[in-house]
Length: 334
Image (cartoon, rainbow, N blue to C red; front, top):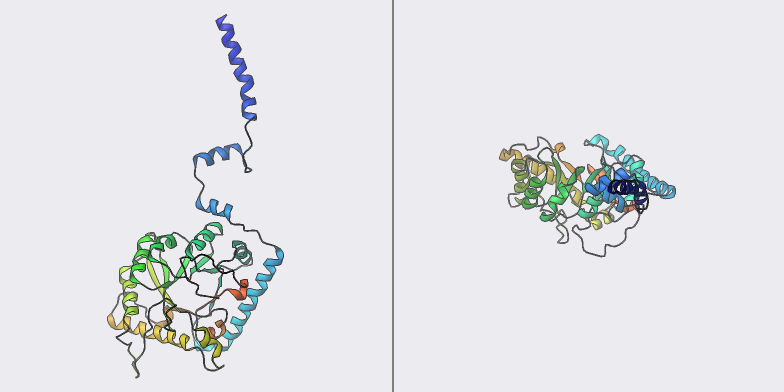
């Protein structure tokens, strides 16, 4: 009797077990049961989480609009470059500044072949970088607080941080960058001496055939020296400025923007100063330091005056909505 009852219970388990499994509610996402089980035991990667949050789909109309805009800007750069190419330097790089714009806009331009994109807010860049293709070359062009350095360094395809302006932030970036990686950095120069803008003061050149930098402006020299000698994971790659918009819009066709001239002369003075101090790893020539200058309203003037890279946003993406909540980066391009 006991044996018969045991067999009956065993048969009941075999019969009803599939029914119990079949009655489980279907998962809300479409994938196999084995994948569901794996995801329950393995935390989703940051990139998977951000991809789920950011919509990368775009319409053909928006893609065509963006493509036409960026091609028009590139054509203007090419035309100006053709006029000044004989003066030396390299053809300027176009950085599409996508701050406060959807990731789908970036994806549309990425699919059209563009790779260099700029962001002003570190968290926004982190989110977009995790969701978008890993071969995008990100430029951070906003003010970076030293306590956000670790967040910036966590982006493996951060091509350059353009706004370095303190030894403290340099130290934090160097500490946060993985041992097997090197992060390009530009030092931001406040060429217009405006209080609202970040950056160190420019260097001036004394008159004469062998100009020397003004010894009173040592902050830039000290910062550059520190990067070269104390920050092995950072590479001093150039200088960056936000030129005065009024200087660009009010100048004559032959006058040029004095802020752009100041950045060029600062580069000359810096290279000379580092050489005279015998700083290890100092650039051998001015050409080893890029100049990031020029935005939507003045990029053509910047190209004329020797820019290595222009940062263009509204001409490509259109006007941006105002950022309601104060973020961790100040706007530095339009």
